[in-house]
Length: 252
Ligand SMILES: [Zn+2]
Figure (tube, protein in one colour):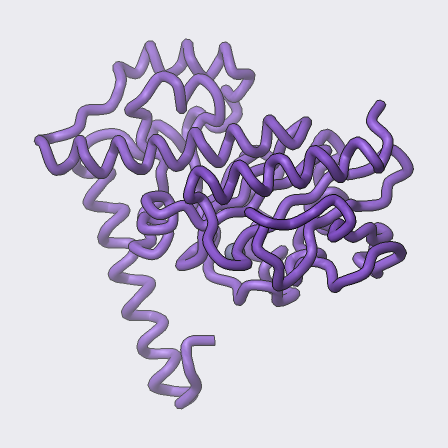
């Protein structure tokens, strides 16, 4: 089992990788690890993760209160704490804003279509979690209906959130999503994109231990399903516009 001293070096390494791979810029993104005693080591707020140092890491208790470190913990500490409470199997979390995946999250298009075997056979698919202001206490609520069966999420108009057994596992899931988003974007420019055969989808999900999401994945097959995705975005937009009109309030 890793000591907090070893974990903080790993956090620095993966923060630098996120930055080097252009998955984050400026002070974006955050990483955390659940320590053996249940406390959470998290990256600091307001510091570029591409340049951060081991001594910048913060340790918080399970409620998100800082117990060790110099700076402020990431503003997403509440979200990380909620996830560790919900999912005892998760030991690390990685959040980033990679360009293609964040583009899909901003266009409000989930990455659920079963197109690439490497995606279906690992993370299954990537649902879109409804908008919650970054750092706010309503962000954890947006994941409540998805957290039991998915490990990676598009956060609407925000970025990617990946959960892992280790920091490397969570980082790899961010990379899988970003590569999928980039490949899908290019493929759709080149011609119609076809989903894998249903039997193959089922085989891959079974191998990944994800048959529990089979029905949700199958809903994203074929032109009818794709246009239904687009229609539901339009319906939601119309509903949000009418709420805004009635209340005279802003988006949130
Ligand atoms: Zn973010």
